[in-house]
Length: 195
Image (cartoon, rainbow, N blue to C red):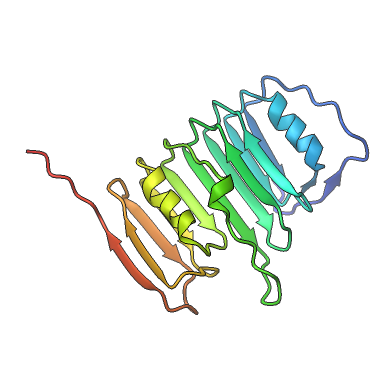
């Protein structure tokens, strides 16, 4: 029987991890060191799915790169941390989800930085529950993801006054949690007629 509760697991020494055939990595509530995780990710080049849920506490940066087979990446971070997210060289990434949680009104807002996140153009599903405070992030979504068909944006931390969005491939758009903000929302579906 699966438990609904998570417990923190801590390693006191730097473990030797040799999992070159690992295809899926799911860490939930695991207190793992930043270097240990980076070593693990760099040695497991066959990874196809990664879920890091409440397992990157006090990381300065979370680097996921050079994983040519990675298909799905799900990250949930504590908003109190100032973890920089660096994604690159993930050519087959199809599903990306990034969530901030436990944000309190007195906490400083940590923006989602589009400059350090290079999402694969093959991405079809994107879910962001992050602080979006500049148009570069929105432009990355609009112009850099030609196959995007499923977009979910949690807008509770939305820092822009407007959301103008055009995407030819989009089939499902969910805008959530924007009850306290007044946002000018305009969504256009760009149709191309073929004669």
